[in-house]
Amino acid sequence: MMSTPAGPDRPSDPGRARLQDIGTDPDYRFTLANERTFLAWIRTSLALIAGGVAVVQLAPALGERWVRLVLGCVLIALSVVMAAASHRRWYLNERSMRLGEALRPTPLTMILAYGVAVIAVAVFVVLLISGG
Amino acid sequence: MPKIHDSGMQAERTRLSWARTSLALAVIGALELHIGRSDLAMVDRLPGLLMLLIAVGCWVYGGRRYLVVTRSLAAGRTVLNHRQGLVLAGLSLLPAAIAVWSILV
Image (cartoon, rainbow over all chains, first blue to last red; front, side):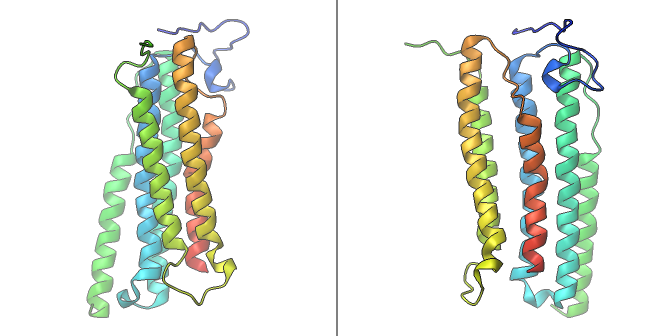
């Protein structure tokens, strides 16, 4: 389906070429599924950002401002890691599909799970200390 | 009846995914606007306004992308946009940068 061969004017070297010049076009459904997966990760990252902003601005009872700032910054830092990694994953998946290679496993799910667990424990400790 | 070139409504599902992302950005924008506080200067509301602008941009891009994808499918062209990597990279990093600005205000 919609195959575009790599020829002299379409270099197949994945190191330097633009994405659309690498390999051949995969089934468009896979390309769009890859885009939706990226957007789903971005929304997860946005949820972490919302949590970070909310902790700083909407939860004064949680503790001192610096404590909330640290929590908010950690949440936003985790969201940056997720967003950057999901962009790289989108690129690598698209490239793998264009080259007909297997998709690589991702550490994103593990980073998200352990990151959220660590933040949840930190919030629990802050609540215990502040007596909230 | 015109022929449907998109079996499984892939383009429509992708457009809706862009719309959901745009709405998530808008919610964060509203949060960063410090809604409910009237004592803030305009500069303190800039991060929220910027985030709302990105949300609008995301909505518009999703709509344009839907049109490009459906037209490309009808014409048998690739659905990969040559600027897509840049757009997705911006979407990855800008919201977090604005959020940091917002909580430090």
